[in-house]
Length: 212
Image (cartoon, rainbow, N blue to C red; front, side, top):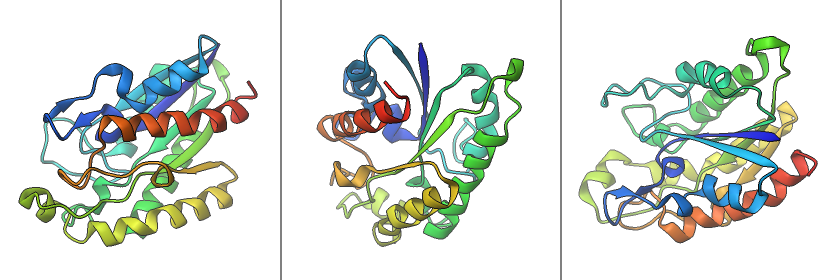
């Protein structure tokens, strides 16, 4: 049995902008990935609304700093064969930093954690797949427009920066924006069709990485 950890934010959690609730379990991209890969693979979804790559945001009761919680989750779900990280959209908030280069550096820190973590029982470090999230898009939602001011332009640079980082690190890379787009309802989240598209598109790459 192969085990895959999907580490992300509300796009992984399955936030539904239309209902301000959560997509059905079957529509979330980790669930779609699980369904396609079948019984020989176990996919664990660890999504948190508002999670950043490696930066503090104290506007919620949960710790949103992705670098702080990742070590605990790596041990929780070990042994792992692959970690998929799709983060960076929330880094585009001006009060977090709003800078795509900083988000890339945050992803670099997460990669270091995955590769250098003290895994229990001598288990080896898993493979790593960096995923650039779909870009923030323009919206008429006043709150989200202000919350992600400038994020539509800044987030367009994440794909190229993450691809370069993946080349440098020798790990996998996928641009989720090549198959999915954020909803104009709030400019940040995914409707059911688009989150399903990410899971379906990742499946062939994951099969190759896991040698299935």
